[in-house]
Amino acid sequence: MTDPQLWWYVARASGLVAWAAMTGSVLWGVLLATRVLRSIDNPAWLQDLHRWLGGTALIMAGLHMLSLMLDGWTHFSLTEIFVPLAAAYRPWPVALGIVAFYLLAAVYGSSLLRPKMPRRLWKALHYGSYISVILVSFHAGWSGSDVGAWGYRLVAFILLGLTTVAVLVRVLTSTAATPLPPPPQAAPAQPMTVTATYPLTREVLGIDLSRQGGTELPVWTPGAHLTLQLPNGLVRCYSLCGDPADRSRYRIAVHLAAPSRGGSAWLHANAVPGKILDVSGPDNHFMLEPAEDYLFVAGGIGITPIKAMIEALPAHRRWRLVYIGRSRATMAFSRELKQRWPQHVSVYARDETGVRPDLARILDGTTAAVYCCGPASMTEELATLVPAPRLHIERFTPAPQQPYPPRRAFEVTCRRSNTHVHVSEHQSLLDALERAQLPVHSSCREGICGACQVGVIAGQPQHLDSVASEEDKDRAGVIYPCVSRSHTTSLTLDL
Ligand code: FES
Image (cartoon, rainbow, N blue to C red):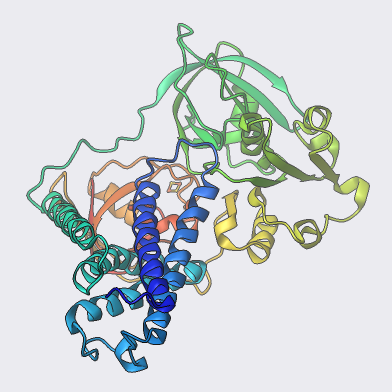
């Protein structure tokens, strides 16, 4: 034990560093997953630190194994070092270390492949890191380390205890008998007064809305939208485009669609100061996530959520805006944005350039987070150019489903109302819920606006909406029943 051979010391040091880095990476990962650190302005480096600690643990574990083979005293064979229970020396503690190494390699490998693998598989593999760090602590405590063995053992038992408590809490809180918390109600519509209107272009009308009595409005975040329930029965969503710090009014910009399906035409004709409108929200399905560098791409009226994002960015943040439209005369806020941020804003008017700018060239070499709101041709092209984790899209029209999956009938249990609903292959889930007198707010009925969001308690939804990114769909635990269906034969909804 006291033989001062070099490789023995390397084995001890690398084992200690691997254990510390692995424990640090797991604890850091827990803080990130529970979003304790989300309020910090830019947590991209925190993710990097989590990955870096995991990578260091893996390299050090590899060095630990190599040095145990090279050391003249332990002299493990290749088989003993890689095959659990093959070692003659303390086979069980050594086996725990070997299994922990494989688990760590699987976890780290899954992190590298995360963009390419289903989120559920990545998550399941990631849970292996908890087991890995417990196994390593037991391995270190019982495999013969002469330094701090009791410390390792203590950590192992603490981790095991905490994990057991966490599993018990998880199991107990997910049992059917547990009463549900109050339903996540869609905010009820409230009457709001049109306080000002102003033409932003020939086709875009700016509308300011305030509470009756002038009381302060709820806080909203860039990317949020209001849902207007118009007197003609139509429900329409409009992105907020004012200053998020201004709590006295909401500002929206309404593009007169040609042809209008009735919403924008009604507002252009009837929204005058003093008019009362029923408004719900703000809701946000297009959140601005922290990043070091942003590239905003806006097409036409898609500038509205993007403008709010730009307004809210800290002054030191790196960003660029590519704003594309038919002509400057039709592009709301183009002059204002160019005047305020001439170095950051590029305006491409097709009547000046003749062609749409080459998005592939604009994106060439960038590693920025890309936020896009615009027509389908623009969003679909970006979807082929930008890796999914970096791309954030708000669409005007539903994303294409390729191939469009066959529709199958399924059963739905609505937990709160204790109602069972059959959804045939010929009807949408939203239609079936409405027929069963289960009220669900809806607006676009195309899976774009997010108004019909319902929580999922059990079953596997078949997400066909264009609200959430592919990455976020399963994580959110919600379904948009106007278009989405079920992979499983039954779903349980929080309704
Ligand atoms: S109603 Fe718009 S997403 Fe369902």
